[in-house]
Structures are given as C-alpha cells and as structure tokens.
Amino acid sequence: MKWEENVRKVTPYVPGEQPGQSGVVKLNTNECPYPPAPGVRKKAENFDYDRLRLYPDTEAGKLADALCKYYHIRREQLFIGVGSDDVLAMSFLTFFNSGKPVLFPDITYSFYDVWAELFGIPYETKKLDEEFRIVKEDYMGENGGIVIPNPNAPTGVLESVGNIEEIIAANPDSVVIIDEAYVDFGGESCLKLIDKYENLLVVQTFSKSRAMAGLRIGFAMGSPKLIRYLKDVKFSFNSYTMNMLSIELGVEAVTDEDYFRDTVKKIVATRERVKKELSEMGFTFPDSMGNFIFASHREVPAKKIFEELKKRGIYVRYWDKPRIDNYLRITVGTDAQMDLLLDNLRELTR
Ligand code: PMP
View: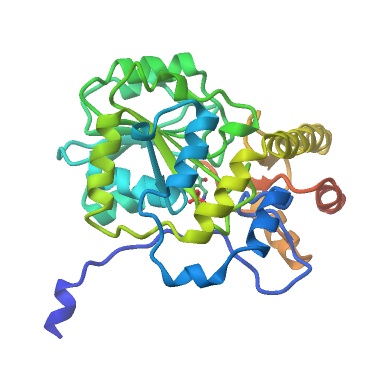
C-alpha cells in the first residue's frame, strides 16, 4: 500500500499511567494532591453555559491580565497555551528552525526529543554529571537552540539563576527556553532576566503548583519579539485553543495568592519530611526542589519496588532507560498518602 510510505511516522511520548480504578494512590504524574483554589469551584458552579455557543477569546484576555498583574509583566510579554506541553511544542516549532542541533540534557523531560523528531529538528543531548547536574560549558558551543528544565525532571535538581544566566549570555544567537514547570516548589525563576535577554523564554504551568492539570493551562514569558513570533505560529495553527472555562477558572487560581502559597508550603513540608524518612530506609536521591523525589535504594532494585507497589495500588513512575533504570520518581502527595507509601517501602526494603 503506497499511501503508507507517505505517512508521517512518529514514536509518541508516553505519559504516566492514569489508572481507571478508584482507590489507587497516584504518585506517578506529579499532579497536585490538593484541590484547586476554592474560587475555581465557585466560578465553575456559576458558569453560564449559554455562553458556550460563542467562541472563546483567542487572546485569553482575562487570564492574561491576571497573569500580567501577578508576574508584573506586560501583555506583549506573555503567551498562553493548552498546558505547557502546548506552549513548548509551539516554541520548538517557532524557534528551532536553523538546521543546527538543539541542545538539552540526556536525562530530562522525555517530551523534548519527541517534539524534535516530530518537527524534524536536529538535537543533541548533553550528559548530566554524576550528581545529575548540568555542565554549563556543554551549552556554550554552536547550537540551534537550548532547552533546560529548572528544576530538572525527573531528577528535581535545581540550577542557580546565575548558572542559567551564564548559559543564556553565551548564546545570543539562539533561543534559550527555561522550562519552569516545577519552579514554585523551591526554585528561583529566570523571569527576572526576560528584560535583559531578548532570546530567553520562560515557560510555566498551572498543572502542578496551581492544581489544575485537568484544565490544561500553560504560559510563556519573554521579550515582545519572541512572543509575537510564537503567536504568529500559534494563530497559523489553531486560534481557539484556550477554552472559555479554562480562561475563567484560571483567573480564579491566579488571584488567590494565599491559597497558592499555602498549597506549595504544604507540599514542600511533606517533601522534606519524606526525604528524611527515605534516607533512613537506605534510599539516596538528588536534593529535589520539585514536587517529586527521584530515589534509588542501595539494595533493592527500583523496578522490583515499582512493580510491587503497583500490585498494592500505589503508582509511582519508573523508566527502563540507561542511567536512570534504578530510580523511582515519586510524586509528593498528601501526608496520608506518603505515610502509606513509606509503610510499604519500609516493608519492601527490609
Ligand atoms: N515540563 C516538564 C518538565 C514536565 O514535567 C511537564 C509535566 N509532564 C510539563 C512540562 C508539561 O506539563 P503541562 O502540559 O501539564 O503544563
């Protein structure tokens, strides 16, 4: 069959499992264990469904205004998309068009190479050092763009803004994307650098710290020039990606600052407690600044623990990939969920 030769063939990204049955302890996709801000629910309950006849605002204006106010930026410095996956995919398509390889770490978010393959962008991965840190000199040669998640996923390792700035400063001819999906859990944002570097794009999401993975909201902040190029591509693809409900509920999540801070504080406190308990059990891990811990046990293989936990209804993430095949990525859940996990781990590693 000839047509099949002309199909664009891709190996898709594999997201973490979303188990159908209830009662599962889900610590495998870095979702927030707490509900979104109370205003989100109120707004959803009072939403006027008649309005769904109409197309949504292509600029997501209300949400854009709320984000600009929160981050002290201007509308022309902000791009909003359907989760940061959408924002990142659009950014790859827009900015990585030189034919030179785009650089990112060898251990990182496993969607980057999928987008590169999909869009036919050449790429090169740079090896993290033994402690899973970025070797900044690796990002200072010729390249077609750079993507760095900070904190990195799945390691949780945070780089200083100083180190990241050195990389940006060394690359005036490429767009540098900093993926800050997890920055709210203890990292420092590179947002403060967007006025200084026209080629810097900072990407964030509502999926983790704002407890809204299901609504799909992500955004990018950068120079008006970068944002304009990004919007040109997006509006050549699909103008109406941000749906009405996401826009309105998103506003509620951004404006309740106290709830946001409280949620993040609880998750960080749980993370630090779990780190201590995991250490006592013989686990080692990089010092995560995300809402997850990337842990390896000194005796019991990660794969075995992963499978055994799953049988017991506790889902964590495991990759059978070089360098990380003895690690589990454990999302920080509620204290009760983590206590259950820790009890089971104690049993499995005894
Ligand atoms: N970047 C990183 C590093 C992530 O781990 C994730 C979550 N899978 C995303 C981006 C995408 O998140 P979302 O599309 O839900 O904003």
